[in-house]
View (cartoon, helix red, strand yellow):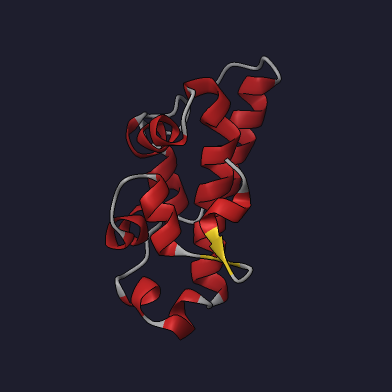
Length: 116
């Protein structure tokens, strides 16, 4: 899906992300390692940290969506599928630890034919 679907006035919008993944804004916040305040207060939603974490999740899901056929299935993979080479951690757990680049590198390596 396009990034515009997840944004509002040039910022990632937790509510729109939640709607796309058929969940709640609070769950989206937990999924990226943020508290409820980060998605309820306008100034916190606009913060660099909140926007970065939301962007990282959306980038990862957009990158794997073609494999799964839908954003909803890609979101399920993001939350629940342990990644080989990361001690059984999921993409969600890695993003929560600030390791989104590792997930993106892993996806790129798989796309290039390198198996983890």
